[in-house]
Image 1 (cartoon, one colour):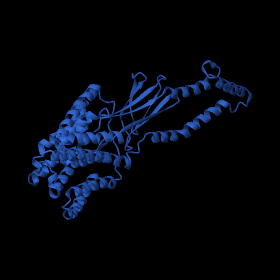
Image 2: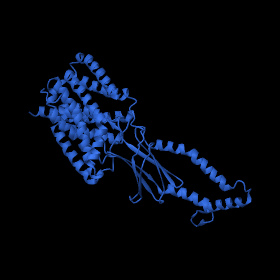
Image 3: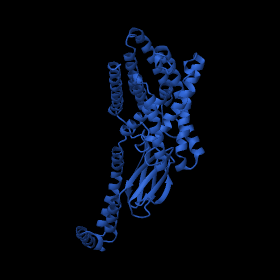
Length: 201
Length: 245
């Protein structure tokens, strides 16, 4: 899911960087600093999740967890994911420093979208909440795959081909992340519901 | 399989928290942090067989007039049927091809120049390897020495001496085994023996043992540090607000 150094053209990198900076600014402004520990924990989870590798399909894909990060953090997903991606680029050589902006947007924007779509629903009763959290986990990866295809549009030229390829390769990840998100949300609801968004406390 | 493991972790994890959750209701934040750290640690150590991957690499070396390349993902999976492009020093494309089932690809050298070999693994993945001009020059020097011993103009003096000796020996010794034969033989054997060493060296130089535990905890440490900084400023601002009503 990470785009390597030197793949994208300068204009795409700059656009990605600008969008990521804007998103991060909004995230930092909206972030509830009393819950900064939560942001850090989810950032760590995102940082480590990329090491869990799903060896299905032609390419190498890994967990992303941007769904969980988005559902719980909203706009704060931007800084959380930016930090995690920076550290991944430095420590694991995943992606690259120049592609950081594009990669951040690719993974954080779907997270924010899923926050608006599903976070009101995950506080509802169970069948609805489970379905919403599955959709959150599933769709955040799906949208990220589409955005990846979109960012490669200027280099690989064939949007549909690349996008189908990325979506197919990440299909197992989407399903796994959907299931993880269901468990995670159900577990938080039982143990520590304050952590879920929209809790008035 | 990994899905089953993850579910299992989830189940154990929720049992663990269910048991400890009631006891430490007075310190929910602490429990939260500890339990999620536990989750991360379990994820790292319970799944030792997962391949650390998300990078694609290509290595190349010169042998005679052929360049051999080997490509793989950082988990060790070979990059099969992946397009490869070869550029010259100016970034102009010289030739392109595809890796075989073992992630290998080789080509005859069309011109002796610096080469950049780019593996296009698709979906934004890309690996690079540069062959410096020196690697070709070593090869060509050996070859010209072998084939045209008296074209001494371009060859360094010590090499002329060497070739002189060999040519004298050529005429002097028995016709059964010439020094050229020996040289060829030695070169062939050396190539054969050195091949595994070269590919091993490639593997070593590839920094590809995946991120170590220190990398992982280092990264988490950075994140916790940032959280600490954020919390510090948050509380400091709050204190200021409290003291200036």
